[in-house]
Image (cartoon, rainbow, N blue to C red; front, side, top):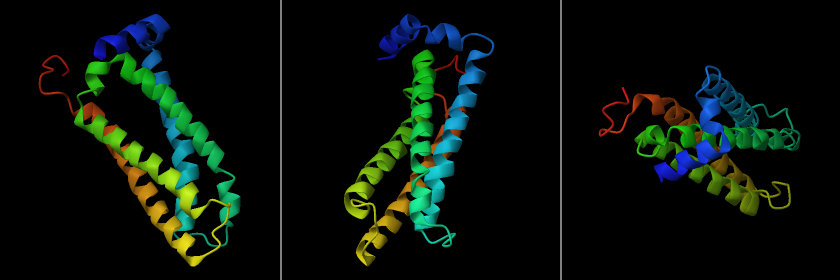
Length: 165
């Protein structure tokens, strides 16, 4: 898998770009901006579902969620750039694997939210509101886990990687 990721990175020019003096810092900046968009919109929406800032309409905040999707896509693209240009740093890293797990749970949670709590774009019953609040708590927990694990990636190295520092 590592070899195929490196081949993709070389063929696409990602590896060459990431190895320039400004490549990695530029992509990290985009990754951080994407995360800010994601957490700034989805996190705010989740907090509102949990009862904070009740003077703000849930529907008004939900209109910001597409910006969170843009942030997620930015992170997906930049994340692929990181992993494909240094797969040995990521693929066997427990923090990275945990980060992907939190992202997977957050994705399933989002699908369930739109199928169960928000199918008609409204929280028209107490049961739907209860499901939405549970989903909001799960979402916040998962995205906090993504942030923490993402930060920890640089501190955990595979035990077999003597040259990783």
